Image (cartoon, rainbow, N blue to C red; front, side):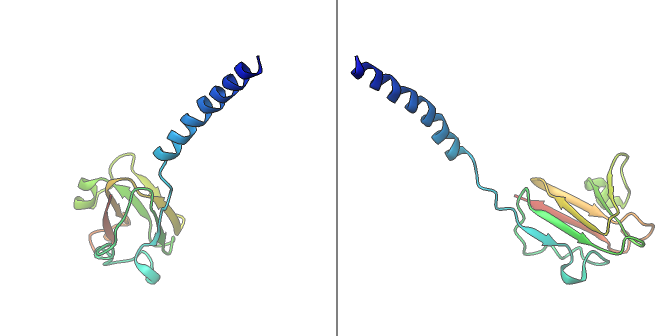
Length: 128
């Protein structure tokens, strides 16, 4: 009789461990990087080349440091970026120390204070 119980116990352990082991192979470790937009100078004018040479990944965090009394950050679509217009429903950040997680693909950000985007206060980031 004890031989049968041992086999059943082993089967139960295997039935529990196999799905857990499979899950471990499917889960990717999170190695999100954090980037301060614009470097030490922060989010300001003419930073559109700041992303050049960086390899962004989905889940990375962009930190926008700026004077919240004169600037903001708006997550926009490609049209909003190109036209410097804030689409209806766009998220506007105003803290001066915003942390934004980027998505896979194109990510666009502008300052929508009048004249700022048109003067170069915008960035486009592509994340793998």
